[in-house]
Amino acid sequence: MNTKLPPRTVERLSKYRRLLDKYKDLEGAHIYSHKLAGLLNLTPEQVRRDLMLIGITGNHRRGYNIKELIGMIGNTIDRHEGQQVALVGIGNLGRAVLGFIRKAETRMNIVAAFDIDRSKINTHIGNVPCFHLHDARQVVRDKSIRIAILTVPPEVAVATTAMLLQSGIRGILNFTSVHLDVPPGIYLKDYDIITSLEEIGFFIQE
Amino acid sequence: MNTKLPPRTVERLSKYRRLLDKYKDLEGAHIYSHKLAGLLNLTPEQVRRDLMLIGITGNHRRGYNIKELIGMIGNTIDRHEGQQVALVGIGNLGRAVLGFIRKAETRMNIVAAFDIDRSKINTHIGNVPCFHLHDARQVVRDKSIRIAILTVPPEVAVATTAMLLQSGIRGILNFTSVHLDVPPGIYLKDYDIITSLEEIGFFIQE
DNA sequence: CATCAATTGTTATTTTTTTCACATTGTCAG
DNA sequence: CTGACAATGTGAAAAAAATAACAATTGATG
Image (cartoon, rainbow over all chains, first blue to last red; front, side):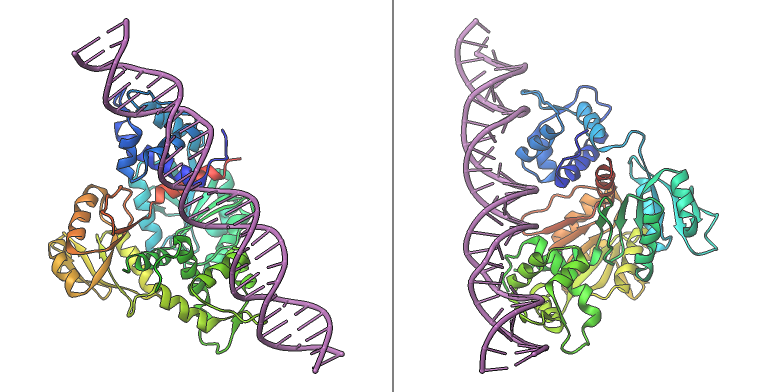
């Protein structure tokens, strides 16, 4: 489908779906744009525009069919059979993130973990097999991995990223506070806890 | 100082400072806007405008004085003697986040942790004392805590948030995937791993 | 069956953020 | 001392995102 959606819209679509997922079995259930907006602190107009952009049509009297909505969002933002994701860096943060994602219901499948600590290689974390980073190219290809979650120590963030890019990774969720330089075509999302805290700190001053 | 900076600018200011912090002892060192921009994948104009907004003046020949720059960013986005932060929810994710922040160099001080598990109360995690959530009001006031990092299980996210708000917290960094409703004046920042992954998944399709 | 209230779909407007463009200025070379 | 280069500072333009406004539609109601 059309890949020209605004990033903000994609973010919100993901949230709509997650919020609505719990009602997915209620056949015929509907929701109004203002209700959905209220639940997520958005405006109804924003919700309607987002849904319009992915071609969802609501009922003028009953609102949007929840099941159809979940389905259409899926058609838009999911790959066909889920995305394969690798966790890179099996420290405390990495393990915690892994646990978090496995508890959440999502189409993102963590299918491999990478580290350089020999004692971790060939073990399983949860049920995720652990490989040496040097084998990334092979594993990434074999398992059709396209996304990496980067939870390595800052010192090795840049070098690790270079290896990941060589191995064919297309998107990176960067938990290190290190700035990464990626070529065009690679989608990088920074997850910078410190910056977020400082931002909060600034905006609560008055 | 002026609190009307665009959120994006505040985010970038935090990043400028973190990047430049390693040069803070080089007396008289300067950096050009285009150099700083290159390091963070921004445009030089954007950098200059951000700095202009907080009243920094560069040298037309040598660029911006790094030390002054770090100082001015601090004047703008820091509270006077750092911010007091509480970690709420001492599970794996909470502990990992705590470890991460303590390794990073930042003015955000984690001064208390909260949980409801009796076995954790009155212990220390790292050197952070752990309290029962019921004592939040008291502790928050005593320690001048203004920001909470929320790493509790999703089932209790809403109830916990209500308690935090009652105790006088002003800002929340929300690691749960649960949507939180906060009154005006409270600054909430969602840290939604799943949404971020799905966003990456969408944008690498083509 | 006509009315009415409520909601959608979408165009227009406003606001926010980024980018462009260029006059201005500090420093260095000669 | 002077000219020229290479920055900065900033108004203006453009792009992106959010909000407002309102006609069109639906279905419930009397």
